[in-house]
Length: 355
Image (cartoon, rainbow, N blue to C red; front, top):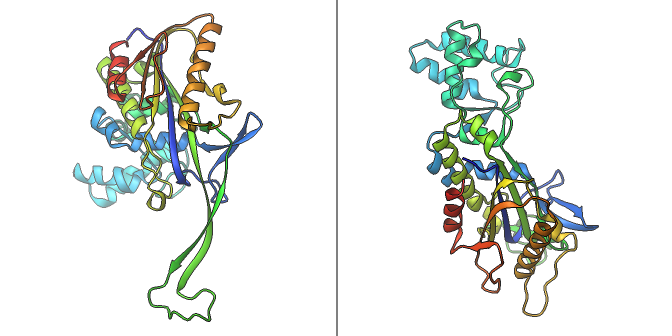
């Protein structure tokens, strides 16, 4: 792969929802351009990408697991399957966990969630059990999502992985209007007594929500991704394909049963950059967009994004890149220097052909 970075810009509208909550059980928000905006954290989006069905379908078994319960759920069952007794499997798993975490605590869980693909984890465990002095070097290639999102182990720095992908917090393109929902849950067996103020109600309460158009941005360094995957070019290409497919499918599940916010992106811009620095286009929305007569927030957001892109391409000293766009908005016409693709899948294919 000769390109330097691959970038993805998405516009996505969610109906009334509470996708990503803060410590007060309210939808996350922030101030941008001196105006409060809705926000979805990058960690929330990355988890949605990792868990999207299309990610595993594209990269196969090259998907990692993040958990504090590796000892009980993965290590011990693996060792028992290899013929060890329950007692010996527990001892071996504990010794491996203590060495990995650099502590002598007699606990079944690790203090942080370990993030490994199963082949890598088992190779490390086998090397440790065999008494190899440099057992950490026994790890095979990393999993696709570990290669993308990185891994940090303070007690085992030689197993750290620099993330190839940088994912921004999703940002509302317009002023936030946070609203309150007063809800009740009926008690089917409670007497319907008209003299009671809460007749028929088993529970009641309030919950915040908002409806917003979000701008999402992500960038993947191709040299770092290739290095993390042991220079396996085919796996690197499938990882990029999986990242794009899963980014479309990545809808966080917060309160989804009560909001059914199955609304994928309506606008996508992708970039294959050979030279120059990546470009986050969030400043298109420093001035929040507004709906106008016959122009909704979706169209206004897309037009603001494309205008800012044109301005920044003129401003940038280096712009050696290919641009692709896919949109469901019929009002958005062609733009010079941007290939108009018929759908998200076609845009992804265009990206892969330019790597």
